Image (cartoon, rainbow, N blue to C red; front, side, top):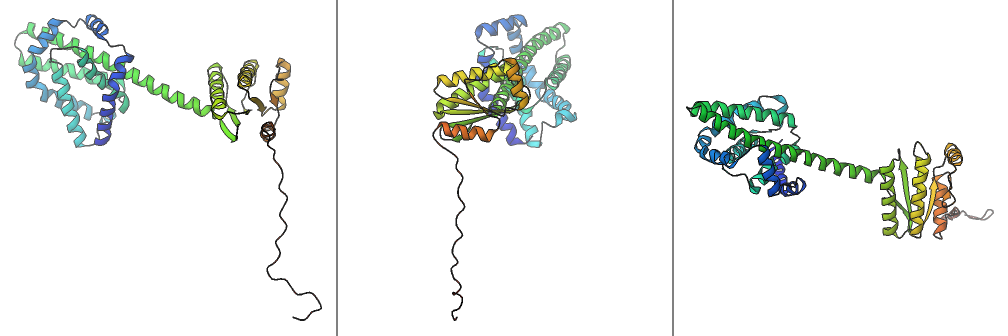
Length: 337
């Protein structure tokens, strides 16, 4: 990943963090609840603030060893494109590390941590690498505590407070990662649904909806919504629904088509059903489906011709034009040149 891409990802993550604050309902009550669950007390925050000189002393060494792990594994190395990117993320990591020792855990702190999860989801960093990196993070911190602090009790209390705020952060990042991932999936599904119900303008006030693939209840709802919206926007008088690409037409599919036709009729438009094969016709008769509320034809071309007739237009053949007279005509026979 190049430097410009990383910068764009961070900017996008910064713009997303307030959205995820709302999605995750991270108000003051929720933050207090999370702190209570992780047993992150005011005493822990005070202890962390007192450890700030320790953090400032060891941060460079911890960050270097932390990135030695990430840059030494082929699956995580791919997220760092060049030396400029590596220098930049190390600087960001130093800032992040020192904020663990700010002695606060309020809404502003939480907002900053949400950017981490959003950025990781955006660049495609899987949670397994994120969690593995944090294991290394805690290991490095514990090693540094043993070097810098002399009392085992002091080391134990310090590490307990650090561990609590780190796992508090990890939970926020994972929650944001999941929310961002679900948001992306939702957008992709909406785009796919839109592509699966393409309403085409055939002529003024005549629309065409070619259906391809299976129709379940969710897609049927999407079809009706798309049809009605386009009928209103185009002030259509007729919509052609072509089912040649629908593999199975059963009672459920027929019921969806009838409901869509009824809704279209309430808007003052008519429905033409095309793509009806002999098998589909036989199935609909056996099911007792009443198709009297819609026009039915087998071929799409016939449906288009019928729809144009409904709006007062007709397809007519154009007579071939007479051959043009030659620019230089031959003289009549029997005359001199």
